[in-house]
Length: 386
Image 1: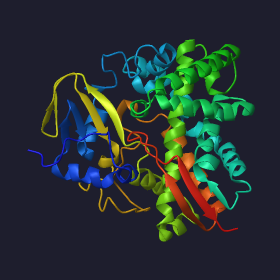
Image 2 (image 1 turned 120 degrees about the vertical axis):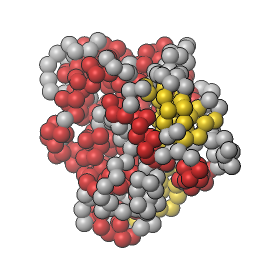
Image 3 (image 1 turned 30 degrees about the vertical axis):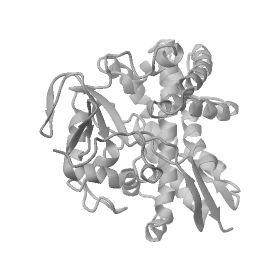
């Protein structure tokens, strides 16, 4: 019998929201899976890997999707997102998109990604909000480039992406107007991307690639999904990387000399941009000694799995040269993050240029929203010496 209270992602203290890992560690030390309120919370790396890679678990609950009725545009859009699809439609859509997110395509974007980062980092003031100035706009601008969105629409697109994210389940539970705000943004984005899809018949941007292979609702949903998924997660990694490095001078010095692929992987493991992801059991199945009945909701605690001492040596330590031990931050299996290659390049280039531009700096203040799924600060106040 558990000696801990039933696990829940609601009503955490502010200090635990900012640093959930001690809480995760207590539950993980007791059991790889905890059951509370008919939800199976998965904490260990081994159990998380099993759930994420097995097609016994999927994204559909059978209840009509994650958006409640009464928000028709938002609901249609989200239900067409790749992350909420199962085979065979998931396989068909992913095969279309894989070409545009191949390593060779991303490599060809490196110069443009570098130019976007340099432009954002030009003339940094002595004091500024890192999220507003760089962490949030940078990934939005990169995905806008990939989608072929005109530059004059980039600020508008970012504001709509932020509004749409109010509809995420963790935020909607705390704001009665969240779905209304997200529905309005979904309508704006639907109208905008529908026009772009109608205009694009040839070209080398992602929307042109989708025309002919997908219908309009699918094109719109995919554009919005790529924009929002790539925006918030990568924003969180940049912000949390700076917070992590601000208290670790040796690691900061090492990264100023060059951001390696291993360092990117470690930063993403150390403080995950997404802490939890849901799955549903499509049949009775036993994982880590726990029987999970068909139809059950499963929450995979990515942040806990990424600090599992059974998988990672000294998991609470930042080791930029860590070798072996794959994190689950980008997922596993058929839902492995489509944009993982792009995100890694953004982090390698963007973080290197950011640290170069920051020079000597201190963090003056940090504010976290209450969100235990998409996890990261919405404000990081930085002071730098010129």
